[in-house]
Image (cartoon, rainbow over the protein chains, first blue to last red):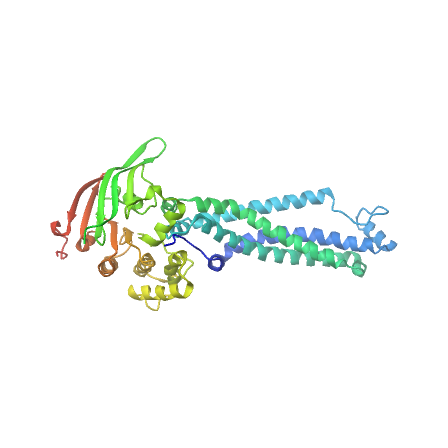
Length: 216
Length: 242
């Protein structure tokens, strides 16, 4: 007789999905944090991509437009890196986002102590609990990051359109667009996963009795 | 058939360290419970019956002493074996029902089967059969919040039976139910015990329980006060003499 306790992946995805649906409002709050951070990231990246594209066109008037709009273009530059200040703000926004997610997930864990304790009484292993929370975070992360990246990217394109006019899209660097979007989505998902790890581990380590004793 | 003890508790003590003071909740408990019996652990609140219940269920570890389930010392089990024991050998029923709120009745019942490795279709079929047995046919798609207390506790009974456990542990199963529904749940448990040979151990201070118990263990102040067999019981709780 094999003494194995299992939780198939499909089942954990299903449980995670149902939990998100059942606590839709809380999930939305967590996801919005992520959407904002990721859209900010995507916005900065895509803006730089567009400016790079304009610079790469080699047209002198385009360069003048860039300089007039506040970009530091030196003769011979082929790309416009983000300024240290911009990077600093980006890093800060990511940190704020992680703290926000940890907070939301800790709340969600304490709301579900009894549920976690019950699952453990039914034979769930610690890693099932971690897995369910991580799956939830991955789904929220994916949704939030995709929406954020699309929103931020769109906003960057619109801003460029208003600032530079059609000039901005004479030679659009599609490849860097795709790369920037993909990076933003990946970073968004990672933020969500990093944010859930600590709460999930706390949840999984709980002894069933402690979890059941919590008044709710 | 020789008498087999499914649960054996030897000299178990449990202290709770509350920082400034240490509360001695269990002061040396010795028990053996035979397979297939319906056993009630009775005692006033604060007597330690929930604590002993948690020890037997492997939900808490004794400070000293040993708990054997099926002659296996559960202190020796690792996390995987303990999870297996909780999943396959023991079914839990709680005072507060403790169904998973986001799952339907059927999903609640099939969850332990999923943990136990039963494939989806077989578990759905068995889940429906168990729900039918506890009289909840047609309610399988309801969430716990859409069911009454008595119905929720029936779902919990079906869930406890999911993996055909050897023991059902019920902690105050009627504590949150009114008189009539409480009696229904008790007779349901008795039926399961009689038909399927499951050992039912229930911690309670509900005197309705005495009526169906094969054995009653009285706990007072962290010690076993007395153990009564069914025929020694004198029941004087209006109209329930048997």
